[in-house]
Image (tube, rainbow over all chains, first blue to last red; front, side, top):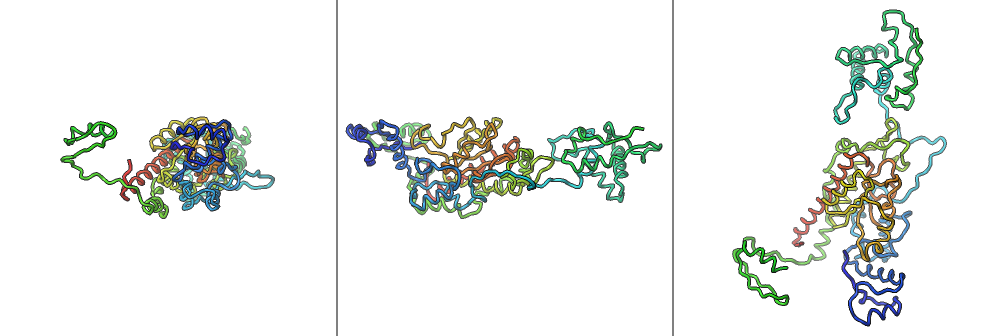
Length: 247
Length: 267
């Protein structure tokens, strides 16, 4: 709250005569002059607020000085220039100014309009993909979302897909090279541990693992196209169905 | 006023008052068996002392040890690194992003940590210098939390509809000579219709520094000390509120301590 300030002590030369007449004749104290028009009120207010600042009050009070557009120079450089030129006195310096001078921000806060990106301009933000994403893509393609739902409330939660990936990497480290064999091997290993993976409709067991001679089209081309695309692995259910020939 | 105080203390201390009623006469008290010793002398600080109290903290890079208040893991656990989807991305936020994982923008938490430390340091210094801090947010989900944070830290909050001239027309809307905030903290830089909050532009007009959490769909160019991070998840906002409250209270305690150290007594 500001202290009440009497305008009587200020030189009223800018005020209209009839305002002065109202004020000085009676001699009673008043915090606000009896203004008869808006412009006089504003002028009086400006003087009141200018004179009322004593120890580093907010710069917002003087009306004319602070009304600047938000573009261009910002508070730090603007206030610095005002202080240097003498428009702002030392006692009117805002309390944050020294802090701003001691710890300037990394980037001067000047308004910038976002520019459109046209034509062949590349997206500067890189995509985040990992090596395990190939394995994850194959898993989701084959088995859909997996038997167990994600429990995101625990940060140390290991999903079915993650277990699959870890097992796959273990088998790969042991020396297995063929992707199909690795995939089947991981599925069998997880089955041994008790996780039942049900294939999605449309996926057939590949002919190599089956005893009989069942003709199947390999799923490899479908997998490769999915890995290249931007789709989430979870969206594989709505994604393209790979061609499978029915026997 | 003084008489009431004396009368309330009378039974405990057992001193004798020789008082004359009436506002013109001074109250004379004689204390017997007063345990604490002589009353401290109240005196105005000298210029040099005031300068030392105000300017010494500026020489230290982290006077209030705000960097010890949080770690990168805390930010990660509070889901601060999640941005919006790729389509919502603001171009000016691209430098602050680590990457894009399956269409979801991910913030670079290394940068966020540095920005947050700078912002908290600035907040602490402003609170140390008895500045008025205003929390602004237009997310209705967190309005109560932010108001509570502001109340507990002894500062102010505005989480309701922002009328056009609150800062720029304050002399008309409030009263002449009203003191505007010295720092505005934005927990959400956007308003309910996903446009930049008016207070961002108005604070820039009125030379009020701003600290703000900028999400991947915000324009960070007008905020003095932006903090790139998530502003939509409850754990993230709770973390920010907790950090701001701790810095402000820490800074105020430090100021009280420094004043006492230099022999000043304040009420």
